[in-house]
Length: 115
Length: 111
Image (cartoon, rainbow over all chains, first blue to last red):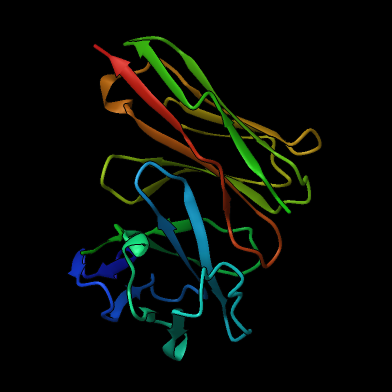
């Protein structure tokens, strides 16, 4: 596609339920990032995929969070047993290479509300 | 650990003014620095990417500079317009590491 696509754009879920957030990166981009942004806060790094290397999971806040990237393309971020503090905008980005000399492009985000 | 600071946190200027947003980072071993714009409730739009070997990049009324050795970057906006009102984010990236963001500068341009 022309840009990074995220779905759904909005998600309301009940506390304790599991949710899956999807990210379609720009075709051919090997690096993919997940961040979250709580209301009025900066961007918090979650996880980083770079080609076929093991992902950098150092930003995941708890073991309720996991992510996978299938076939080097689409990525899914899963939050199990959601809590109210998980409410935030989850942003995905991709870039052409993992070496850091290329521009990162962001999707429009998924706004997650846990009630 | 890389830390990015943006000053000021908020800025309000009258239309037509030139303005400068500041970004500083603690580890100068970066591959690139990128400036983004974020409108309320929206994702991030990339404005300018400066690679570590470059000193500045320009796009229209925007000019970004990079002084890697001192850990600083500035984003200069010429002849500001109300449509420039947004939050401006600075992010740096090292080799095979994720982007590290500042908390942003919230800009309001008053007509």
